[in-house]
Image 1 (cartoon, rainbow, N blue to C red):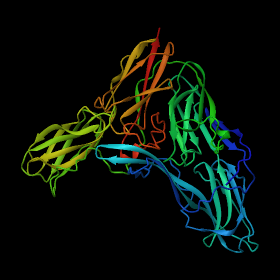
Image 2: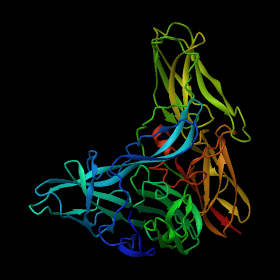
Image 3: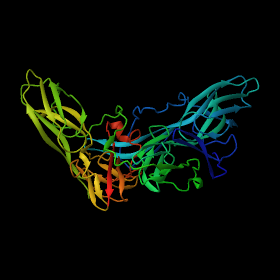
Image 4: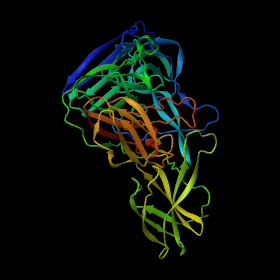
Length: 543
């Protein structure tokens, strides 16, 4: 196990270009050759609901810009009973830094595989016909081949490499000869923070990139503060240790402090005294230059990726026609409530076809047994011609998320077609863009869902988390009641997705009940085809 002899950390200015600040953090550590616990064999760590609760381990979607594995997966190897030490110089630094690995006293004139310990991390869910439950995260450790070389006649080798773009934290390095780990070293990949820009008017989008997060529970999350106010949580399970979030510059005019650091939801404030002192963060100053008035309402959507789990809620499992050959399709498979969409079908009999919207009704409050039930909502009907039909339906004003349109003939479901109801803004979203100080105002959304992935939206007021709203009991309609505070000027309201961890509650579900700032790249809903955005609003407060 690598020993960290000095628990203090040093912060090094890595660069400042075009208004962007890059910081790197290096834990002061033991001398070269110190290593982490052996991990040549694959292992998995699961932080999920215990007991008999079933879960699905999600496969990461193809998130744009994510680094690949540092090398091909290594074959299994066994440790040598006389394992030596590799000299790794330096033994810590950021991705892309020069790295030299030297081995000696090894078998002469042999090919050597240099392996590097890495991991995959992902999310866990329980996908059911009537809901999706969030059940935590997991990580799997394994080794990859970082480089190959050969020993000389003296049993020595030396290679110069670049530190791979990979998870932060402690990595095992092995020299493997003929399937045997003959020597062992280690490297600590430290963290960097990039903030861009560093100044601008109220409402300026600020992109914060925190690289070098780890794959484990205690190293895989981060917390973001604005002037000591909690903004939300960042994670990097599907982005291999790189967490990126965009917030907006809140007033008043002047200097503001951005702080980011290691967290499971909330900031770990004494990291240098922890078992993971290399997980330090940064404090950066942002200067708000002026108040240009409230920017217009907008929606920031997540990455448009193909889902990796085909699990659509409200799909019926009973009442289906046996051996149906009906094929049905919608012209588009997603949109807000009240979307008009063409429906086509073939293989029908001459009987009249009923179009039915499958959804649920219920809530998650004071729920002890049956919390919600399936309901069917008529969408219209049509008579086939020659076994086919082409008709237009209107998506109901109701719950968001995945639903199905059912084609029913003679009381039997002949076909089911999924449709994703997207969250949307009602009207201008804000009841008034000019509000007297201390007076109430509202924000109005529709199409909010009911699963633990999409039944809530969190609310940040001037980058301070103040609460959340739920759309289940109100059938997708969310009317948030807020008060205008903070003095005269422009004030920002930002809504982010949340991982709901109540009703039902499961053990070991980290990152729940707070704003997910990395919703665009690292949020379990993406793997199921959900598109959960951030909503951006602003008001002017007057006396």
